[in-house]
Image 1 (cartoon, rainbow, N blue to C red):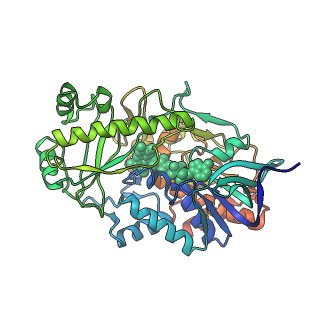
Image 2: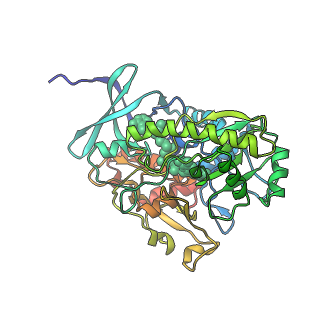
Image 3: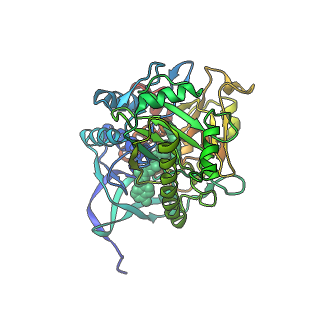
Length: 457
Ligand SMILES: Cc1cc2nc3c(=O)[nH]c(=O)nc-3n(C[C@H](O)[C@H](O)[C@H](O)COP(=O)(O)OP(=O)(O)OC[C@H]3O[C@@H](n4cnc5c(N)ncnc54)[C@H](O)[C@@H]3O)c2cc1C
């Protein structure tokens, strides 16, 4: 039989499908472990949702005042800060960053570690040999080609490789309804000093014009709600434009505000459905035009603002999630569960952006569960990255094995970094010593190695 693809002459120890938030870190960590690594990325830069979907800043993940994600994340933050693309605010939050700078930094980190990258290339099909993946078929300008490795990491966010390998999946809540998608954008040409003064006058506390953060969500007591009502009466905004509105400053980009919105139409919630994904891009761009008109007309300081960026990637909070050797639950989070094979600590709230309206946010200041203590955290076990039924594959990032509620907490970027770092080291070891079998990696040694690299485990 003639296969419809050619097999590339070379092979690698580890291939990472998707060089996004988790995948870039996985590639860097595997390369620093001595593996021959190839990162295959659909877009033209690394960083995924953190760069191409323009999701900034990193959400804080602290316990007892200490960052829980260190290791490679510290290296990334230091490099961003050194080039003016990362910043620490007066409150000590070191998570502000410029996505365009992050693209450059991640690429340096991968290449200087000896890793390789293949951009503008989609992974389309695994080639299975029993319960192992032998190769990934990719599509790019060269047509269809098979790339071989001993171990694979699926960091596509949507678990494309795992799904196509027959790994059982979950998706969405109990009704299969996913979290809302958003298409992020920026406005440039903003007089941030004027905007800051307006926000302060309108009861939205601001640190300084360099670190603006403002928001409006219907029914959550935002002081901007009356302004939104006016804009709807004036026909500038639609009611749903107020389902979620949030703006942030961006280091290294004076006069520019990054918006964590618009939220995409509620019937378009499945980011793994290509038709919905495409329609979301269209819906988002229309909403960005409305929000731009709103800001110009109703927010002082934005009169001369113009669209700086429309993210090339729709922001997908949750789509497919693998069923792995362990499934993290809401109870694990609230009870501060500990695991022998823990690779990451998390204290971010359960944060569900529901297409049914509003946001369900369990904050660390509410409730009586152990997780609500200031110095609490739960752990994420390595087994959440190990998909059922395949021996040489790991799945770090937002598609790791978890319930809908648990995923909404662990999905933030810094946890994806930590999961990616652990997956990279483990895949490199699996390739070197265990013919790619990830379940044979000694997790005590993995934890020790993560700690040696500065990780909090
Ligand atoms: C709108 C929105 C706002 C958010 N807000 C915050 C926030 O403020 N702070 C925070 O910390 N977190 C936030 N998050 C969560 C966080 O950004 C994501 O959960 C996280 O970045 C996901 O990382 P990942 O590695 O799993 O996926 P991604 O970063 O999306 O990486 C997946 C990568 O795989 C590539 N890819 C996909 N399919 C293929 C394929 N078949 N072949 C080749 N490449 C492929 C993609 O191009 C991408 O580069 C937000 C998320 C969204 C969507």
